[in-house]
Amino acid sequence: MWQTGHQHQHRNQPPDPYTPTSGSPDLSVNEYDLTLDYDVGPNRLKGQASLTGTVRTGVEQLILDLDRQLRVDEVLLWSDGSPAAVRSFRHRRGKLEVTPNRVLDAGAAFRLSIRYRGRPRAGNGLWGDIGWEELTDGVLVAGQPTGAPSWFPCNDVPADKASYRLSVTVESGYRVTCNGRLVSREDRGGRETWVYEQPEPMSTYLATVQIGRYEYLDLPGDTVPQSLVSPPSLVSRAQSALTRQDAMMNLFTDRFGPYPFGRYTVVVADDGLEIPLEAQSLSVFGRNHLGSGAASLVAHELAHQWFGNSVTAANWRDIWLHEGFATYAEWIWAEAADGAGSDARAEEDLAWLQQQRQDLQLADPGPESMFDERVYRRGALALHVLRRSAGDGAFFGLLQEWTQKYRHSCAGTRDFLDLADKVYAAAGISVSGLLEPWLFESAVPAVRFSA
Ligand SMILES: [Zn+2]
Image (cartoon, rainbow, N blue to C red; front, top):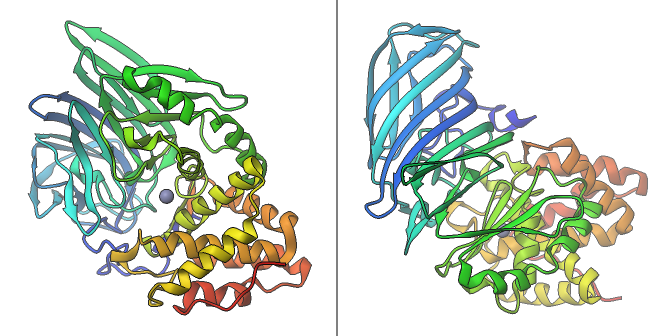
C-alpha cells in the first residue's frame, strides 16, 4: 500500500516531481540505526548511520541523499548477509553514490554503514530553513519536506518508511528528545547518551532530534501517555496551553480511530518559531505559541499524528491530505469545546477563499504553494462539504476507515476518493463528483453552508 507512489515509476523519473532531486526509486530502507555524537556550542556532529533495506531493481550503485556540509569518511556494505566490497563512493551535489564491485540483484538485502561528520545546517530553499537548525542554546530539527539529509544519509521520500533507532550523545545538562520511546539514558563523564526507538514505520522528514536545556514532565493522559519537554521558565505557560490536550486526544480517537503511536510528546523550544511543527509521535512549539489561540495549534499538530504521520501523502502534491485534515480537526475541536458551529466557520472561510486568487489546485498546488494557506482552508472546506452531504456517521466512519486502511503507510488523493466513494455508496452519493471541483479545479465552487 505504501508503494502507491512507485506504481507508475520509471527508472529515470524522480520519485516525487515536487522534490526532483530527492530519493532513489531503486531502493527501499527498512531500518535506520543512527548513532550521533554532537557538540552543541560549535555545532559539530559525528555520525554513524546503519541502513538496512532491499534493492527494488538490479543496481550498480546505491544512491542516498546527504547534504554537502557533511563529509563521509567511510562506507561499508553487506549484501544478503555477507560483506560486499565497496569499489568506491562519491559524495557530490547532495548525493552519496556507493558503487559495490558487483551489481546487486533485484530483491537483494543490503546493509550500509556510513561514518560521517560535519557542521549540519538547515537547507534554505523553496520552503525556508528546513532540517537541522541551531537554536540559541540547542537544536531543533524540522525536516518537512526535504530536511532529513541535513543530518543523516537517507532515501528522502515520504513513501519509503522505515523504523528507527536513534542514539544521541551530548554534553550533560542538555535533554535530547527524538521520535518514539526513550529506551536508555547513560551519563559517562560529562556526556550523556540518549537512545530512542521508533518501531512504527516513519517517513524520513518526520525523523527528529530536539536538544535543549529542557525539563521533562508527564502530562495527564487517559489512554495515551503524553509528556512535555520545555525550558523550566516556560513549563507553567506550556501546561496551561496544553490543559485540554488530553480531551482532544480522546475526541480525536473517537472521531479518527485509535491514536497511531505509543505516546505523544510536546516539545517547547526556548526560541520563537514561525509555526509549530509536527514530527512522528511529537510536536514542536515555539515559546510564542503558548498564548491565546494555542488550542487550535495544539489540535492541529495533534491531528497530524493521524493525518500526515501515520497516513502520509504518497506524493507531496497530496499535501492537502495532511493540512486540510489537520485544519478540519481544529473545527472539530472547536465544535466540541466551544459549541462553535462549523457552518458559520465554513461560510467565513469560503468568503475568504473567494477573495483570494483562484489559481490553486488543491490536489496539486505546486511545490511553491504546498504550505499556502489556501491548501489548509480549502482542504478543510472540502471535508466539510463531504460531511454535510451525508452526516456525521458516514463522514467519521470514512475517516476511521481511512486511518485504518492506510495506517503507517502512504496514500494519495485518488485513494481517498476511491475509499470515500465506497463508504458513501450506501448513501447514494458519488464523492468523486462532489469533491472533484474542490480538488482538481482552481475556481472556488459555489456552495452554501448555512441552513
Ligand atoms: Zn499542519
